[in-house]
Amino acid sequence: MSWEFFVGHINYWLFTFLMMTGLYIVVAKGNLVKKIVGLNIFQTSVFMLYISTGKVTGGTAPIFPVDMQIDPEVVYSNPLPHVLILTAIVVGIATTSLGLALIVRIREDFNTIEEDDLVEIEKALARDENELYHQAIGDRV
Amino acid sequence: MLVVTAISVVRLKSLFAIAMLSGVFSLLSALLFVVLDAVDVAFTEAAVGAGISTVLVLGTLALTTRHERPTKHSQVVPLFVVAVTAAVLIYGTLDMPNFGSATAPAQTHVSPDYLERSVHEIGVPNVVTAILASYRGYDTLGETAVVFTAGIGVLLLISGLRRRREDEDEDEEGRES
Amino acid sequence: MRHHLILRVVTKMLVGTIILFAFYVQFHGDYSPGGGFQAGVIMAVAFIIYGIVFGLDKVQQVFPPWIVHKMLALGVLIYAATGIISLFVGFSYLDYGALSPQHPEHGQHWGILAVEFGVGVTVTGVMVAVYYAFAGRPPRLSDEEW
Image 1 (tube, each protein chain N blue to C red):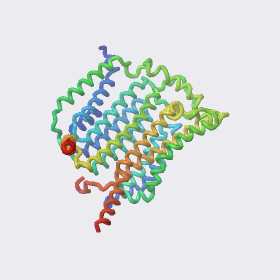
Image 2: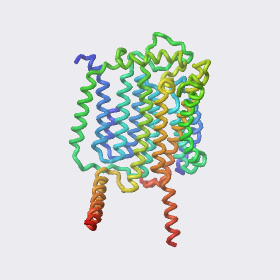
Image 3: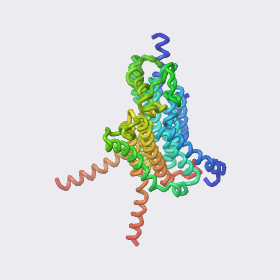
Image 4: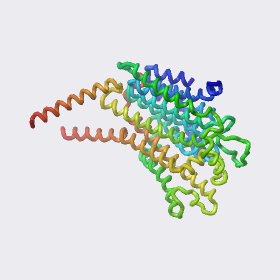
């Protein structure tokens, strides 16, 4: 565990901590909107982790000068993770917008967006359906 | 500062503050991306995270409640799950190369090849756009299809039904009277 | 939002600049950070901020919902059609060299421009359509409760 190892890896640990905060919000909190925000935090910290693997010390952004005279001394950071993360960001907002639309419909139908209330409502619905089913079966048997 | 923002999202009860804090988190991460030399990604993250995401969360809040009720079940099991996951992930990162090293496997196989080839094959100064649109064009086609599908999904869920419900109410009133 | 005068004046001045910046980012995606996604989002933001400050009816007069719904599919069509054009000329799908067989570099330029334009159109359409959907529902919280 030399000092160089510690400094070279602390960025991974910091982003892992952010990821775990986002995951904790998704798992532990009951409000649905807060869960979606926690999911966003989780996604963004995954992006940070991924892009930090692409950075080269002393490098610069992967854009050539306009006249395309490439200086062979200049070191460029890795452009491939940037491309993948661009796609991932856009997919992330697609998921977020669909999730929020679902929350709006849930609120309109059940009048709540807390997870505990939703579990109670679903149990009550399942109980009613079970009773109806047993009544129907009872007539036939 | 990122850590402070994330922890305050965990603790706060007012959803309006959480919406604003998520925008702050996105802007701070865009700053971090600029420091890590990822300018395209920083641009997209700032526009999308701090703009569209905040607007959508605020729109949802206008259609639902503004405060969170505290949960009743215990918080110990989630903490345990999160701790175990964190331990496993940190164990995994012990093997990874140091931050910024030029000999890491991520820097040595395909990317120097792309950087060299794109000079005479494509001739576009922005290498990220060149890879996105030309070398990895199929992925971008799939991603555009994903955005399109998400748009259609939201439209199906939210927009059309109001008109149909109004028509149904009018039909019922017409039949009753 | 009838009583926020500063917001209304500033928004009127900003919307034109934002749309111009969106076009700049779209077509300079080759030379500076930018490209289809960023430009699409920025263009959508211009319409969204106009809708927030001036009301949904006014922005729907300028940009009616049926145009938005057509734009959603049009962008994906432009992207896929660029690939199919390459098929017609005899190259493989999405091979931009087909667009100008003597100078493959120029073909790449044209191909990238067309493809990013398609992406920008779709992203603009999706963001504005989602905003229309969310803002079109009657809100449950009145202005005073905020």
